[in-house]
Amino acid sequence: MKPHLRYLAACLLALPIGTQADPMQVDRFFAVRSLEAPDQPEIIVRISETARANAFAKAMHVRQPVRLTSRIVQRPSAWSPAWPFYTERHRLLPIDTLVARCSTHAPGELARRVAMGARIHGNAWCPAVKVVREIKP
Image (cartoon, rainbow, N blue to C red):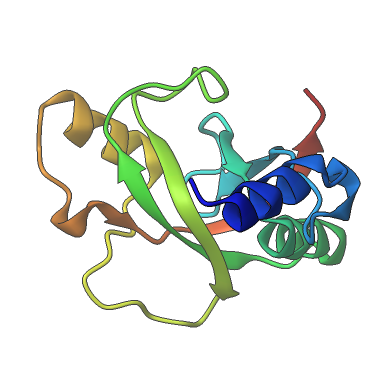
């Protein structure tokens, strides 16, 4: 390695960690309840992005129903043990928004289909939900 590159690498490694642009993101967990089946257990969603977590917190405080768009992962998770699937890539939309090619089945029906090995089109799920609470780990 050339001496000037070695010097540059040493300088970069010597920078304090606090000079990074973005602070470390911490996962936040929210309980959502399906509007189609309010008697079924809550679904716990894990949010890793600050802006999306703030949107969930706002929806929780406003107490208005929203449309949750997400991708289904057809296996259980540690944070939502009541269901044989978990969701990722979450986004909240106004309740009256229709999303093309997106399953809106109630969680119980979706769980039954997943348990039977059915393929969910594009693994997309867009139920109408209410954000109930934030869960502190």
